[in-house]
Image 1: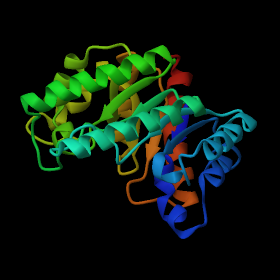
Image 2 (image 1 turned 180 degrees about the horizontal axis):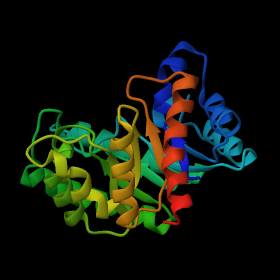
Image 3 (image 1 turned 45 degrees about the vertical axis):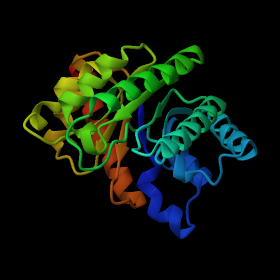
Length: 259
């Protein structure tokens, strides 16, 4: 089954020194029996090639694939041009890392501020140009790049649809954090962006019904990616196991129903 838990879910353990990226992979593969990883960039000790190759080796040794490299700190838009240039360099670094580790997808946030509701024209022009540039590199190397409804204007489904249409590239898509919308279209956000969704984050706060409905929506719109679980406040081993079982139950229900 294509299930994973994003490594940021274990950040409290990472910060306490009780889990590093290798412990995360060991847990995914042998504690939970999963073959898919979603690595958050801050779970990595370094972006140095030696460390990245060691992580790549750990994935190969466990016969795991890296569904996504989820990154923070390299978003595209900053008001300061120097900050934008720095983040551009960091995006290229993360793309190099993703290529070295064989990632299927890289998340790079759009930016533009946590309190914004819409992208300005200058912002959307820059975002479309940059994402198209990154998407072409990703496409040429066999993976995709995308933005997540994470904060600011990204949480407006109209703006995320606008962004996807502006980029208009097969190497670009959206990472859907289920239900993380605001504004008058919040209730329809998942459905409005499902056609462009290339990766999913399922928050642990979802009820059973709240989990099954968006999963069915995505399946019915052709989603074939990984069902990735995200604990926003951090997870214990037991909590992660329970959420994995809940996602497995939905998938098992589909199989038994022949759908």
